Each structure stands twice: as C-alpha cells, then as structure tokens.
Amino acid sequence: IPQMALKLQSHAVFLMEVIASIIERVGAATRSLHRHEQAQVTRQTLRSALLRARELLERYLELAPEFVAALKPAAGTLEFLFGRLASTSGAVQTSAVALMAQSWASEPALFCCFEDLCPQALPSLFRIPGSPAVRAMIASGERRVGGVVPIVAEVALRLCKGSILDAKADKKARRQYRDVKREMRRKKKLEGGEDSDEEDEDD
Picture 1 (cartoon, rainbow, N blue to C red):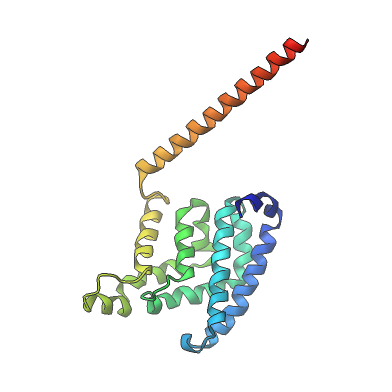
Picture 2 (cartoon, rainbow, N blue to C red; picture 1 turned 60 degrees about the vertical axis):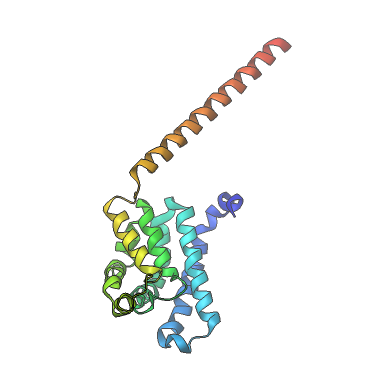
C-alpha cells in the first residue's frame, strides 16, 4: 500500500528478515521433494514470499545492502530456484524468482544482488535459452518459448545498458520529472508570496 510506505520504512529490514525465514523454511521442503510431490500451498507460499521480497527491494532502494544481508539465510533456496529455471521455463506461470531477477536488473541499486546474494543467478539465467526444454518448444514449431526467456533477454540488455532499455524514453521521463518539480517549486513560491501579501494587508 503506497500510503503505508513511509510508516513501514523503519520496519522494512525486519519484514525482509521474516520473509527470508519463510523462503528458507518453505524452500527446504521444496528442495527435498519433486515438483509433483509438493503441496500447492507450499508453492503458493514460496511464490508469495518471493514477490513480497521483490516489492520491498523496489520500494526501499536505499536499504538494498541491509536487505541483501537480511536475505542471506535464504540464499541457498534462491540459488536452487535459479538453477531449476532451465527445466521449468516453459511453465504457464512465470517463475517468481525470474521476476525477482528482472527487478534486480531494472535498478542499478539492486545490481549488487547478483553478486552478493546469488552469484549463480546470471549463469543459471543465461543457460535457459539453450536448455532442452526451450529447444524442444522451438523444434515443435511453437511461437512462444515460455515467460522466462524474454525476461532473460531483458536482464542481459539492461545489465549491458545500466538498466536503461529505451534511452529516449528515460530522458523524457527525467525531463518530465524535473518539469513537475520546477512547477511545484513555482507554485510553492507563489503561495508563499500570497501569504506574505496577506500578512502585509493585515498589518
């Protein structure tokens, strides 16, 4: 909830620690069982925890180093999930850990996650386009190769270009942001001037 972001900031690292604990505990069960043996609630809980971790990272970029430290206990599960992507990349639902990697590549402040949290994330991701599962889909004449392959391509492009895919769009967004801030300052100054005038009239 955007309105709660400021209130939650002082508790954000603690929340990430709780999420990391959930990821690791549920991940332990995930690693010990084949996918078809896992209860649906287990998979849903793990997916939800990964998505909440991604949201916290995106919301509080300035806390990235603290978040990485908080997620360390779950690093084994994250590495396992990245390593398993090659065999599950054709799934109907895009893997939450792939969406997490997409998020890391979208913000320079989160690039550290690839090195400090999951060093095997990128090697695992870049093996996916050549994996047997993807080659089989291509050989069968399918036009789609699952949701993960496009994410892998996007991650590679973003990392090569400092997270920016469309330089023109980025410049335009930055210019609009500056224009909005300038307009807000102008309005604030005018309102301040009006208040001063009213005070003068009262005197």
